[in-house]
Every structure is written in C-alpha cells, then in structure tokens.
Image 1 (cartoon, rainbow, N blue to C red):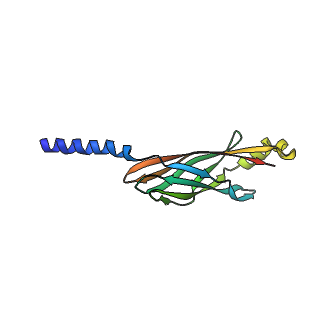
Image 2: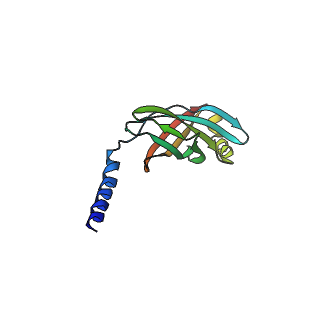
Image 3: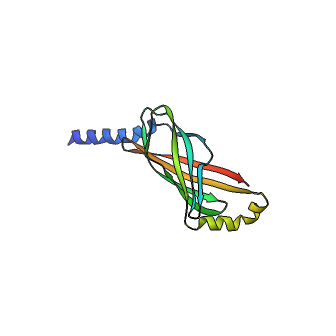
Length: 151
C-alpha cells in the first residue's frame, strides 16, 4: 500500500512539473491573405502563419478555431489546411484556409458599399487559436491578425 502511494505521488508530481518545462510557442509573422478566390458562393483565401517552436519536443497541430470578421460582421471561419507538425527548435509555415459563411459576402458588400465606391478601407481580422498536442499535452497558439483592404 505504501509503494502505491509513493508511485501515485511521483506520477502526480511529474504531471504537474512537466507542463512547466514547455515554452510558449510563438507566432513570428502572419503574411497577408493570399490565393484569394471570389465568387457568388463567397470568398476563399489562404493565410500563412509563421510559427516558432522553442521546445525540445515537436507538436502536431490538430485544429484551428479562428473567426474571420469584416468590420463588425462575423464573416467566416479559418481552418488548418492540413495537420502539420511543428519541429522542435524550428520555424514552420502553417497554412490556414479562410472561407466566408453563407450570405456573409452580401452583408459585407451592403455594409461597405459607400466605402467601395469612394475608395475607402475595409478592415479584415482573424482571431482565435490553433491547438497542438505532444505527449498528450495540449498547447494553444493565439492568433490575432488584422489587415485593411484598400479599395
């Protein structure tokens, strides 16, 4: 019984100490929207995020929960193009796929019609997080990007 208690204590101590050994995964750079496709069904684009993993373990990025907004309109969702592994002590380009929601493009055009005619600016933003995992431990990478489209 005494050995089981010591073993349980060691496991709990290791589980509590292990996450403290990991460093925060950093977003180094976010490139502008690229590969823009505009159709009656909406807009599709890519967003490339350059991420640095300072840890000795690699992390597999599993999912993204990022919201695309145009001004005040919740316009679309951003997802991982594919699951990718962040190598240890390395910088990796992560491609995110941007797609507008049904009917969002019409609302964007309606709200920003005056700015489009007069050559104004339309603010785009993407906010959320990418989730990665290594050895059963989850890491979240915050994404906060904004870009102004000049017409």
